[in-house]
Length: 386
Ligand SMILES: NC(=O)c1ccc[n+]([C@@H]2O[C@H](COP(=O)([O-])OP(=O)(O)OC[C@H]3O[C@@H](n4cnc5c(N)ncnc54)[C@H](O)[C@@H]3O)[C@@H](O)[C@H]2O)c1
Ligand SMILES: [Zn+2]
Image 1 (cartoon, rainbow, N blue to C red):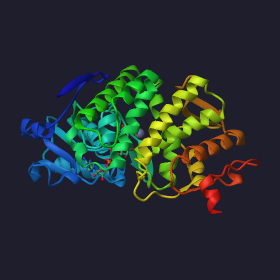
Image 2 (tube, rainbow, N blue to C red):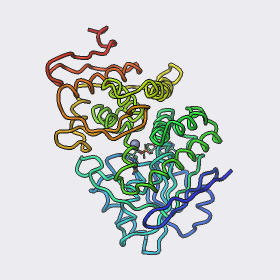
Image 3 (tube, rainbow, N blue to C red):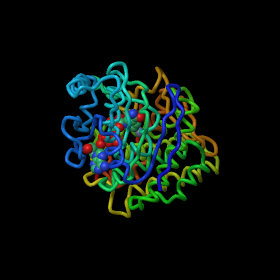
Image 4 (cartoon, helix red, strand yellow):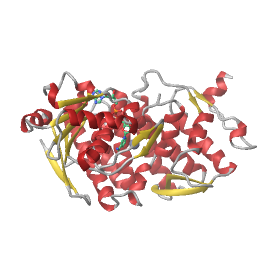
């Protein structure tokens, strides 16, 4: 069954449609549209070459340096102010499309069909783009939502378990950020690696309608929407320190567990907060372990020294203070600022160590000089190898 709802934005509202068989319908209904698509679907999309632009969804392609090439392609295909651009792909293609559609002839109409679970459950609404510049990730960007978001759940059929779990972590994050009742409702939908398409659709609609509240309350990331960075500051450090060997969504799941461990180490949680965050952490652990078979086929070694360095350099911190989203009191999320000193850094290192005990990947410990004098937390798995 097809479902739809509206998202209000200052530039006008847009419709979100979720269902099956929608790709076919979009192609049939838009005989004059141009298509910007992930080249993974090159042979699967029955659209003539003169109406499509294929883009490889490599992180290196969502760079400011590559935007001129996309703009030129649009020009060569005859795009003008009246052109309707249909975009098919995950977050990388979405970022490229948001940015280029916003600047081509000062903005053209576009429709987005997300194809990864991360983009279906989270990034497809909100209208943001994040573009890399000369190796700096997500350094520039803007807001330019599509006129319509069309989610064909059949795209999920070819996603591997790691991509499914990464998307579920973002969906779980959104629901947890809204409140514990919303997170319980999300769990009651029974999200998992082997979901039926009906279950997947239920999870997606819940995640997106919950995100809609954040977007409509705080369109430009000033307050409530910042809570959606839960898991991201701690997670980005894992992503970056493994040279993206840990994918974004999986890193966000690990990052949420680190945030919970940090809150515990700082003594911020009540008994209720401890119980609620344990429900969240055990959900993350169960998805990461994938029935004991391990989710990531060749897990990279995590060097905690490097992860702490990346954490320290995160652009969301201010001078002298670390800023991150953490659970407080009864488990509700808050944007917290902590001074950059060895006491705080020791708790951060400890939180990483504790959270990573949940997974069986090799983790190299933090060396004492990273956190000043004092206790050096060492992961038990590493202790055994020494
Ligand atoms: N703009 C935003 O609001 C926002 C939010 C979150 C993340 N992002 C960005 O999104 C990017 C990550 O996006 P992503 O995780 O959606 O994936 P992606 O776009 O990086 O794609 C990952 C891989 O999956 C393949 N793929 C896409 N759809 C598939 C399908 N249906 N079946 C099989 N393979 C498929 C792609 O070809 C690619 O190889 C990052 O660059 C991140 O910074 C943007
Ligand atoms: Zn994310």
